[in-house]
Image (cartoon, rainbow, N blue to C red):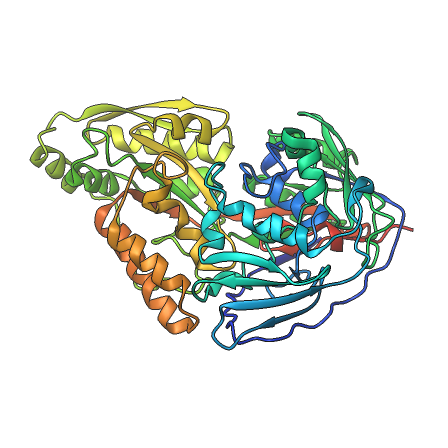
Length: 508
């Protein structure tokens, strides 16, 4: 057995960078890779402007090209579909030239600058607003200057451009012709130009990606990837043990079992994620900050980590993970204080407590965490009923409950982590119904600052604002655990995301 702990370093890429270098080559094989979908969840949509779930981002890295892409097991970027990329001194103009001859899947022809323009500008379509529009917050237009050349014109410098916009899903280049041809079908029958193409999808059974023979780069090892959505981690582990899966995410309480297997590697990925107990600040009695503070004092984070997370990840006292620029190292570490919680409830007019609901999804850690919180709240007179739903977004965007237990994913740039707390996201991903003008203003400022230290100051203050208003109680940044057979495959991860393109087939 081999255990690997991987930690992601923060990236501070200044917009003064003018040229990126080409990347490494990878060998070709003919095997099939069978993996469990991340968190066991099936696909909702493969439209990069509207992702909802977890596995979408993994598949995105395999089927779509970008101007620049992440290196395997790294937060650094290299040229991908771009032959060259030059950034003006003031950071507001990015000139690109595409590699010639890049072909889209399913005979949709050659990629041109028109496809880049269409892919990026559609994030700002007011008639069909994307929840990820902030990833292109300062985009004015993409000017096409030739068949393969263009300019990305920004109103202001945008610090996350190279670290999380261009190499991540907002930078995915889709076929304009395919999108216009397929219409609504595109979301579940996508067309990219990456090393794999979307071959077949049977909802709740399997998704099949096939290697694209006309890919412009080095061919990946596996000729086919089969992604299986298995929500129950125990079933996924049984499938792995039986040889039906080559790799799978496993539950935290299964780590020791696999560490005892000499043929299995256990990969523990430091989480780029925040798990939390969310509070709807617009719903009585949580519109009273004393009630929200009482909830924070009623919760025992260490008990939740031990009971729901098997004691594997560290507790979080703030939003950003320690590896991310702007991490608030001096954030207060609140401890359970039941007496103080009861005092606050009495001051707010609830000496006998009240009833509420905790909404959560079918992820076991969330269910277990919500159950522990339920017991802790009972100690101060808060009777919380747990409401289990399949899709939190559908349940909470329609009308958030008083409390919810959930987790959101982050990326390597800190700006993305804060996006869901902005006023614009109320009614969408802002389940807290929390709106703070200082917070929003700081977020806009930080996105335009290229100096890492100055950006970090803004992000620390934003975390202080959240701490002061208490729309959330932080639990952990989590950990993702993958297992695979050491002699058979060698995965590459971007934090907790699978870079299937770079997975090695070690089998004869």
